[in-house]
Image (tube, rainbow, N blue to C red; front, side):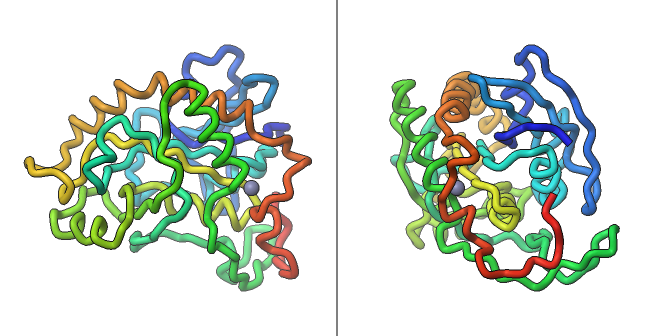
Length: 277
Ligand SMILES: [Zn+2]
């Protein structure tokens, strides 16, 4: 459909100022994605932006059509995805403004379709086989390296690794849930990092999460808990430098045809039963 190469799933702050953006509406066998794709070029790389929550932030985390989002990006030609997101810090040292590039995740979502391989026929009549995708390391090592180097290049020392626990939302955690997450040794808590990561892997896409801490989660601070106003304020303060790091990371990603990371081998030996777009 298009020749995009790199996908970015994030807020409108990441693409709205780009020149020569082409908006493309995409439909998928799983329905419509959160919004149109916004195609543009950055550092000589062709990119497709997708506002995760739709324009105006209308889609809450638990109602995002993650399958449609990832399918639409792959159909547009995307093979590597960067997923910036806002998270809560689970340790006192991960305060607001911390940038963490996780290397593990824990799924505590409840109601989200998180596989393409559920045996349900697609509209074209093809039927995906049951496939069990390798997911021990959920993030692309090459993408993580690009994100970390880009943050350091901008003088923003990132946290290299850690576990993002993804909760169903849209509410924030109770104090007990937050203390439990922290006691398990997990680093940050978010609402959108899953099933984004596994659906990318199922489509053979490289996926890298870049987690901006906007608040200390309920168990890690002593105040009244997380407020949406505070999250928006800290995100607003950091969106500029996050965008710089993100764009540097786009430029630093390996050439798509040179990829030989684990993401590209997730389905070695499997018969998927369907053609990926
Ligand atoms: Zn990869």
